[in-house]
Length: 235
Length: 381
Image (spheres, one colour):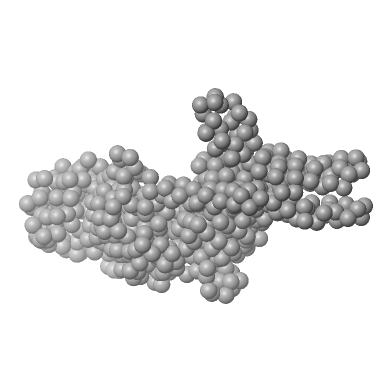
């Protein structure tokens, strides 16, 4: 698992992918941060609340290559015939993408420190926000990883991931469109919304339900990922 | 070391592998032969645990590949058909990744250097794999399989894409590896298999059609004892002398192939070896033998016979020969046609004879050298 993590992590920097991801993330988060400063606000949660839309577009790109490229290049033959469990393989890949994401998110710590020169920030809220962004990003990564495992094409993986992200973003709106007799379904759907749960973090609410929701999403999708790879061997 | 029992693999309705069983002993080099689509790669992928079988079992040194995958895989080095390379890494970085992946215990730097030296890629260690030629990539793939000194090496067409010099190097390497490792090698280049392997398994349509040494296969399958000889001297006298040799059944004149040199097809009693007698009688009369070769089936013929429509007849021959070496006449009727066709192809004087022309020039030096030539061309003792 460690070997796979190391290789994937390094390959983000031997390819342009890692740099592009970080650059795009830093650019947009920096833009929102400078807007915050421009309006003389020390409320960093604005930056976080806009991050969702940015992540929605760039996380599918971060993960598109992870599984699909192995299959296309047949390097999965090496991984699957090595003494490594499939769980280890999936975890290694997941953690590599997560580490890049965490690197990107680390910039918000810098922003917070800059803000602290102007006024005493609410550290509890900032920590809660960073934590919420981390676990929400992890859930997004695990979903995109699963989509990447289902195809041999990076492009399909990217578009599929983007579609999934859009769906999770809009699922609440979809829920409101349902007729009254399907209210129960609308209820379930709106519970699945990534964005509304994320908004809770941004408003400074640390709800244990939201934390569990994201963490269980990570676990469930990584589990599916293992099963998808396992199933391919048996077909 | 490797035990394969009743291996079956379906892809939907298609039988890719159909009840294959064989075993490989420690230190053996097994050649795995078959035409395209015979199920070679599928079998190898099952052996290495890349895909699973529909039924049947694979044991590597006592560990079942499905029940104890980690232990079994630890013992295998696998070079798939397409070497599984990360083209954006350097050779060094890639091998170091494989080393970590296989959780090796040997000192790292030294081991990687050692493996690189063995497959002769030590001078490209710092280059990015993307920029290497196909031959080098193949060797990096082989290096990858050797990392961790696995007890079993499974190589799927290891010499594809290499130039002739490299092919010979890799073959020699595989032979050396065979001393310490158990090797399964797939190929459709027959001379390669013949040169390297102790034993052959020939599969066709997902089934094993032969499992034996190359020599045994040649002996069992070829029923005719035919030779082709080219002699410089008076044509009629030569024919007379040849016909008078005890055990000679038939002497056919093939024509004057070179100025003053005549070619004959000889058919002898299979229980007698007429080669020495032929040699002495010709040489005693001061005629010159320009070429002398047996038209026993080559591995190519056997392969074609076993993997084309005649496989049923060939198997019958094998079975017949297996029961009793002299029992060949029984199966003769069943398998006469393919053998006939095969030997006619070989008798074709234009092929092979050009190589032979140069060799007999050295022959007068001694008998032994000449025999060696015959062996190399003919196959059997």
